[in-house]
Image (tube, rainbow, N blue to C red; front, side, top):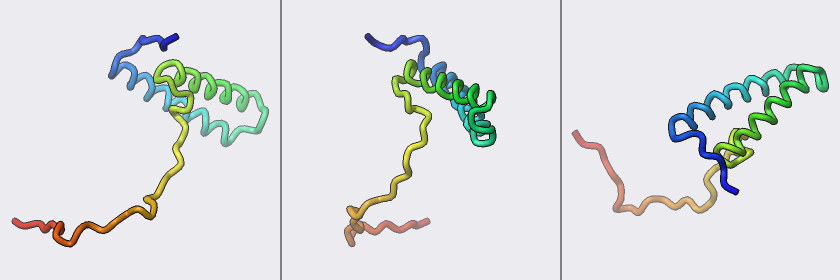
Length: 89
């Protein structure tokens, strides 16, 4: 069964931007609240609900999760010698 297509282009981006802001704020609260306190449990529930929205709208529950930074591997090769470009006025 396909996803519901309630949003189109800019509407979806705006919705996801706003949801991301709420998720970030809840994550900040989670980092400061006592574990298993009512605030911690509520903020965790909101984060989970926002992740559920991400699964429903763009189709990826991990849409807001940070990606692991990557660095270039050993397959970088220098540019060919004749391909040097210079700036001229």
